[in-house]
Length: 399
Image 1 (cartoon, helix red, strand yellow):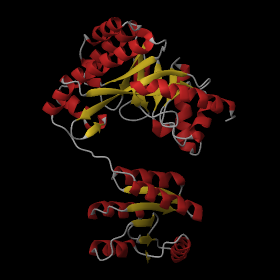
Image 2 (cartoon, one colour):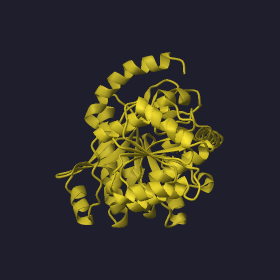
Image 3 (spheres, helix red, strand yellow):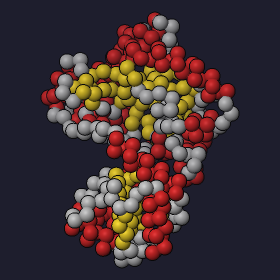
Image 4 (cartoon, one colour):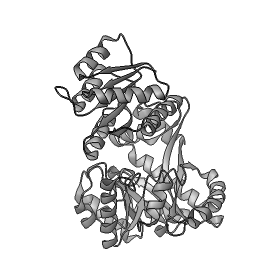
């Protein structure tokens, strides 16, 4: 692996070079000026697999260097290194990811050998993982998938943080594509919203979820069923009646159904949306504001719409125990929800540290890969048996 170091401090370059050599990486090129590094990259004579770049540099700073990496189409790994405030470093990391650069980490100076080894291991694991196929689909192909029964539901469990008991599942749509395999919603929800198919899609997902809830209920498994709805669904005044009728046909109490309203899209007709959302609550159907803290949400929505649940976005959950800025936003969201009498759900629980932090936070419910990945309905019973064993251990340990 060829590595390029860019830093205006000669001592920092020597230290990083020595640490990399100790870790077994000998093909290292150093440049004190970002302009020289860019010229080297643009020449194409020495393709680099990894770049470690300082942020605070004269003439061309790290942020401008990132922009130039995008311009020249750099496809290798990138590690940001800086002695600046941690929030500046985190912002630069988010900027790099937004530019779709392969960011392996952001390290604060002085860099320790352990930190360096971790980001290099990140690169190795990412290189070994298959890259997901991302493509967009045309309206007609999606329409045929909806009408032809190719949309299937996956379910991600949600658990009570006080007891570890499974309380419900979030329904997540998947497309069983005949050529591309399992297609995730970020590749087709946008098409559905833009081409007028979102109502048919939502109706299919909701109907299948309620049918599955009926099957689980018959087996003695009573779970809260959460289904995502688009803002575009909230433009039809008959939507509340259609949802209530679907629940009644399936034999599921409306109080067992929660609709998760994503805040990533603005309301086209706020007045009609308020009408629809209020009628849903009158029918005892739960309303959850999803991914709170991102997109187009505002405090006015919490004031004006009768949500009974707030789901804190994963960006303010994972790592909150280690990052004071993330933790402050998370705790403020929880405090606000409590004062409004809302239940709280933490999304994106990725590891033991997240779990331990949440158990002491006062949050009600959690979901994330640490608990379970989304799964087909047929796998839930087996997972629950395994979770019951794991739950005893998790609840016995002190956070």
